[in-house]
Image 1 (cartoon, rainbow, N blue to C red):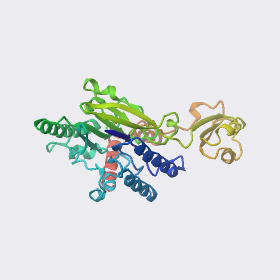
Image 2: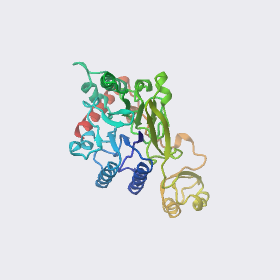
Image 3: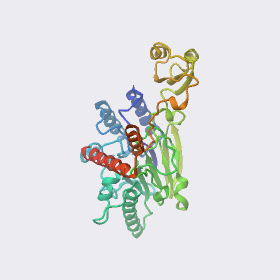
Image 4: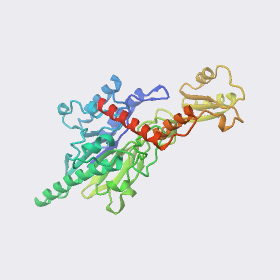
Length: 397
């Protein structure tokens, strides 16, 4: 069986104000061509199909068209991520055409999509993004909620999956059939993975990751959330199996400029994963960061004029009409900053980066406005407020 793993499409997203829809369309054409050329049996999409809970109409249309085309030749298994609205993404799934499976329900985690090949069954289990403040109640075995962490809710979900997998394995063994192979889709931040600036923070209670070994025991773990393609199979220990992030098909921040964007082609044999092949995704243009005086930067226009460019100009005085001069040469300008040479670090405005804990950001703002550092009590109040916002956003979606 050939499985194609992709994730983090973020349909509807922009790159520093540049509309990416035409590039998403180009990626989807490449995806469909790859599925046909490689004779892919199953396409797994591990979350963040959309960039926000209420996506643009053109993004919804693109997804609908792509799923319909994929279903003509392959089975599609899709789970929502932290950017998607599970409720909206899963709306109408009972009416979805044969071959497209939207695994959006937390209570249905242990119910797999079963696909047959010449070696028997392959069971596909989908873990939608599990918001701890909600899933700790949904997945609790008794009245007492689970601990408030990504690890606790993910362990509980995987426990349910393992029970179902063991039951199916026993049933097939009783009939003399080979063991079922297993694939788990999970949208989460596995400790040991390399992050970028463009992933939305998942921190709850100061912790945003889950340990890799909790995914041991499955043939393949298709991860979503981190935007760089990376192999985390070594975290699974002696039980074997493979665990990968496919990464995003396009860059969504400057920190992704050196990433090799890929889809993953998994060859699933009788005993499990035989090979994982990275298939490069064609990129519309490069991301470059240029620094120098205005004249030095403009001189590089012939080489980088068609690239997405983040430019820092170092003239002692801010050049007149800086944005206009740069845009005239760099048609895909992302950012333009003026940082005179010799300016001290303490004189520069502080930047809030995507990987920073939101509670730290709020704590810094509190310190800035009050003149004193946030106390443990202050941080607890801020953390509770952030949790309440996340719950309301999840319920509203």
